Amino acid sequence: MKNSIKLVALTAALAAAGCASLITGGDLIREGEPTVSFTFQNTSSQAIDTILISTCDASSYGLDRLPEGVVVRPGQSYQWTISAGCYDVMAGAVGVGSTPGKRIQVPAGRPTVLTYDGRNN
Image 1 (tube, rainbow, N blue to C red):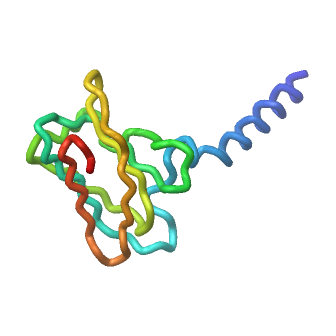
Image 2: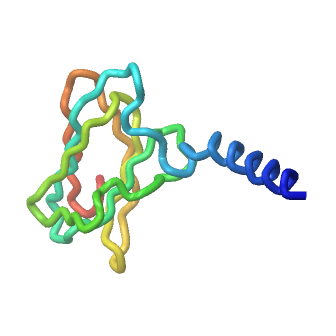
Image 3: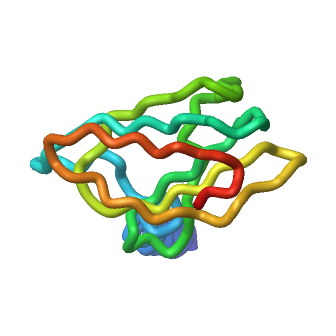
């Protein structure tokens, strides 16, 4: 009985691992791909405490990419190193809400800045 429970648990874990990148938003750095700096610049009047970044082929915006406790206040920015490619980005503040996401293309060898004005246009 214990072995069959372990087998079911192992099977479930392996199945979930195959879909994990779709839930988390995917890896921002992928082995063997060129990396570039990506900067989120907050030009809105609202402090941002949640920034979701996912690869374009992920089924969700994924998880918050800001470290715990980090807030990007108006006029501030936050920078990541990511692999070049296509990303969907959504930002907002807990208790306030978010704006529609924005799809961006991050080219290899060219640092990219996303200016966030609260409308995400």
